[in-house]
Length: 174
Image 1 (cartoon, rainbow, N blue to C red):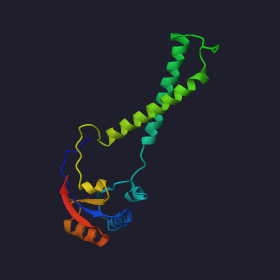
Image 2 (image 1 turned 180 degrees about the vertical axis):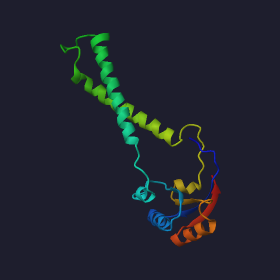
Image 3 (image 1 turned 120 degrees about the vertical axis):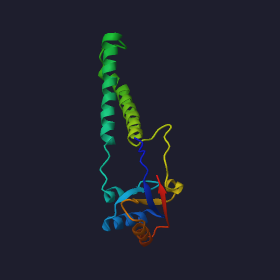
Image 4 (image 1 turned 90 degrees about the horizontal axis):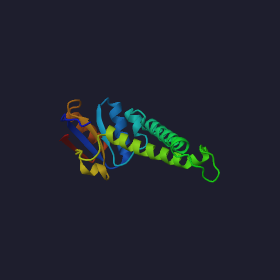
Protein backbone atom coordinates (compact mmCIF):
# COMPACT_ATOMS: atom_id res chain seq x y z
CA UNK A 1 0.00 0.00 0.00
CA UNK A 2 3.00 2.25 -0.29
CA UNK A 3 2.34 5.52 -2.02
CA UNK A 4 5.21 6.41 -4.37
CA UNK A 5 3.90 9.91 -5.06
CA UNK A 6 5.98 12.68 -3.52
CA UNK A 7 4.00 15.32 -1.63
CA UNK A 8 5.26 18.70 -0.44
CA UNK A 9 3.75 19.50 2.93
CA UNK A 10 3.97 22.38 5.35
CA UNK A 11 3.36 21.42 8.95
CA UNK A 12 3.10 23.02 12.35
CA UNK A 13 4.13 21.43 15.62
CA UNK A 14 2.11 21.93 18.78
CA UNK A 15 3.13 21.20 22.36
CA UNK A 16 -0.28 20.18 23.71
CA UNK A 17 -3.24 18.16 22.46
CA UNK A 18 -5.69 20.90 23.46
CA UNK A 19 -3.81 23.33 21.21
CA UNK A 20 -4.00 20.74 18.44
CA UNK A 21 -7.76 20.35 18.84
CA UNK A 22 -8.28 24.12 18.77
CA UNK A 23 -6.09 24.37 15.66
CA UNK A 24 -8.03 21.62 13.87
CA UNK A 25 -11.30 23.42 14.71
CA UNK A 26 -9.83 26.68 13.40
CA UNK A 27 -8.66 24.97 10.19
CA UNK A 28 -12.15 23.57 9.66
CA UNK A 29 -13.69 27.01 10.27
CA UNK A 30 -11.21 28.58 7.81
CA UNK A 31 -12.03 25.86 5.23
CA UNK A 32 -8.41 24.72 5.06
CA UNK A 33 -7.87 21.26 3.60
CA UNK A 34 -5.91 19.30 6.22
CA UNK A 35 -3.51 16.78 4.69
CA UNK A 36 -3.03 14.84 7.93
CA UNK A 37 -2.81 15.17 11.71
CA UNK A 38 -0.15 13.34 13.71
CA UNK A 39 0.06 12.72 17.45
CA UNK A 40 2.11 10.47 19.73
CA UNK A 41 -1.07 9.00 21.24
CA UNK A 42 -4.81 8.94 20.45
CA UNK A 43 -6.45 12.30 21.11
CA UNK A 44 -10.03 12.15 22.38
CA UNK A 45 -12.39 14.08 20.10
CA UNK A 46 -10.05 14.29 17.12
CA UNK A 47 -11.85 11.70 14.95
CA UNK A 48 -15.17 13.59 14.78
CA UNK A 49 -13.35 16.86 14.07
CA UNK A 50 -11.55 15.26 11.13
CA UNK A 51 -14.80 13.54 10.07
CA UNK A 52 -13.15 10.12 10.12
CA UNK A 53 -15.27 7.01 9.79
CA UNK A 54 -15.36 4.41 12.53
CA UNK A 55 -12.88 1.59 11.98
CA UNK A 56 -14.29 -1.69 10.70
CA UNK A 57 -11.51 -3.66 12.39
CA UNK A 58 -13.91 -4.93 15.07
CA UNK A 59 -16.11 -6.42 12.33
CA UNK A 60 -13.09 -8.23 10.91
CA UNK A 61 -12.29 -9.43 14.45
CA UNK A 62 -15.77 -10.91 14.76
CA UNK A 63 -15.40 -12.72 11.44
CA UNK A 64 -11.97 -14.09 12.39
CA UNK A 65 -13.35 -15.16 15.78
CA UNK A 66 -16.27 -16.94 14.12
CA UNK A 67 -13.84 -18.77 11.83
CA UNK A 68 -11.81 -19.79 14.89
CA UNK A 69 -14.94 -21.02 16.65
CA UNK A 70 -16.03 -23.08 13.66
CA UNK A 71 -12.54 -24.46 13.13
CA UNK A 72 -12.24 -25.60 16.74
CA UNK A 73 -15.77 -26.94 17.13
CA UNK A 74 -15.96 -28.71 13.78
CA UNK A 75 -12.39 -30.00 14.10
CA UNK A 76 -13.01 -31.51 17.53
CA UNK A 77 -16.39 -32.88 16.41
CA UNK A 78 -14.74 -34.68 13.52
CA UNK A 79 -11.76 -35.89 15.58
CA UNK A 80 -13.80 -37.26 18.50
CA UNK A 81 -16.69 -38.78 16.47
CA UNK A 82 -15.13 -40.00 13.19
CA UNK A 83 -11.33 -40.00 13.32
CA UNK A 84 -10.58 -41.13 16.88
CA UNK A 85 -13.78 -42.17 18.66
CA UNK A 86 -12.61 -43.03 22.18
CA UNK A 87 -14.73 -42.98 25.30
CA UNK A 88 -13.04 -40.94 28.05
CA UNK A 89 -14.41 -41.43 31.55
CA UNK A 90 -17.83 -42.52 30.33
CA UNK A 91 -18.41 -39.37 28.26
CA UNK A 92 -20.13 -39.70 24.91
CA UNK A 93 -18.12 -39.31 21.70
CA UNK A 94 -19.63 -35.89 21.00
CA UNK A 95 -19.28 -34.13 24.37
CA UNK A 96 -19.95 -30.47 23.64
CA UNK A 97 -19.16 -29.13 27.17
CA UNK A 98 -15.65 -30.61 26.87
CA UNK A 99 -15.15 -28.64 23.62
CA UNK A 100 -15.84 -25.22 25.17
CA UNK A 101 -12.34 -24.34 26.52
CA UNK A 102 -10.55 -25.18 23.27
CA UNK A 103 -13.26 -23.48 21.21
CA UNK A 104 -12.89 -20.32 23.29
CA UNK A 105 -9.10 -20.31 22.96
CA UNK A 106 -9.23 -20.83 19.19
CA UNK A 107 -11.77 -17.99 18.89
CA UNK A 108 -9.44 -15.61 20.71
CA UNK A 109 -6.36 -16.81 18.81
CA UNK A 110 -7.92 -16.46 15.34
CA UNK A 111 -9.40 -13.07 16.21
CA UNK A 112 -6.16 -11.66 17.62
CA UNK A 113 -3.91 -12.88 14.83
CA UNK A 114 -6.42 -11.96 12.12
CA UNK A 115 -6.91 -8.42 13.41
CA UNK A 116 -3.17 -7.88 13.81
CA UNK A 117 -2.42 -9.03 10.26
CA UNK A 118 -5.34 -7.00 8.87
CA UNK A 119 -4.18 -3.88 10.75
CA UNK A 120 -0.64 -4.19 9.41
CA UNK A 121 -1.77 -4.80 5.82
CA UNK A 122 -4.29 -1.93 5.76
CA UNK A 123 -1.81 0.54 7.27
CA UNK A 124 1.12 -0.52 5.11
CA UNK A 125 3.19 -1.67 8.07
CA UNK A 126 5.35 -4.70 8.53
CA UNK A 127 8.85 -5.99 8.02
CA UNK A 128 10.93 -4.07 5.51
CA UNK A 129 8.63 -1.05 5.30
CA UNK A 130 10.41 2.29 5.56
CA UNK A 131 8.15 5.04 6.85
CA UNK A 132 8.97 8.70 6.42
CA UNK A 133 8.42 11.01 9.35
CA UNK A 134 7.76 14.71 9.17
CA UNK A 135 9.59 15.18 12.45
CA UNK A 136 10.97 12.58 14.86
CA UNK A 137 9.38 14.36 17.82
CA UNK A 138 5.86 13.60 16.54
CA UNK A 139 6.26 10.05 17.87
CA UNK A 140 7.42 11.38 21.24
CA UNK A 141 5.87 14.61 22.52
CA UNK A 142 4.75 16.88 19.63
CA UNK A 143 1.44 17.17 17.83
CA UNK A 144 1.27 18.10 14.18
CA UNK A 145 -1.08 19.41 11.52
CA UNK A 146 0.12 19.12 7.93
CA UNK A 147 -1.19 20.86 4.83
CA UNK A 148 -0.44 19.90 1.23
CA UNK A 149 1.38 22.83 -0.37
CA UNK A 150 -0.58 22.34 -3.58
CA UNK A 151 -3.87 22.87 -1.69
CA UNK A 152 -2.85 25.64 0.74
CA UNK A 153 -0.39 28.43 0.06
CA UNK A 154 2.68 28.57 2.27
CA UNK A 155 1.85 32.12 3.39
CA UNK A 156 -1.70 31.19 4.40
CA UNK A 157 -0.48 28.08 6.24
CA UNK A 158 2.23 30.00 8.09
CA UNK A 159 -0.21 32.69 9.19
CA UNK A 160 -2.63 29.97 10.30
CA UNK A 161 0.05 28.23 12.37
CA UNK A 162 1.16 31.53 13.90
CA UNK A 163 -2.42 32.42 14.86
CA UNK A 164 -3.11 29.01 16.40
CA UNK A 165 0.01 28.87 18.55
CA UNK A 166 2.22 26.39 16.74
CA UNK A 167 5.65 26.16 18.34
CA UNK A 168 7.36 25.50 14.97
CA UNK A 169 6.52 25.62 11.28
CA UNK A 170 8.45 23.48 8.81
CA UNK A 171 8.08 22.00 5.36
CA UNK A 172 9.14 18.68 3.93
CA UNK A 173 8.66 16.43 0.92
CA UNK A 174 7.25 13.04 1.86
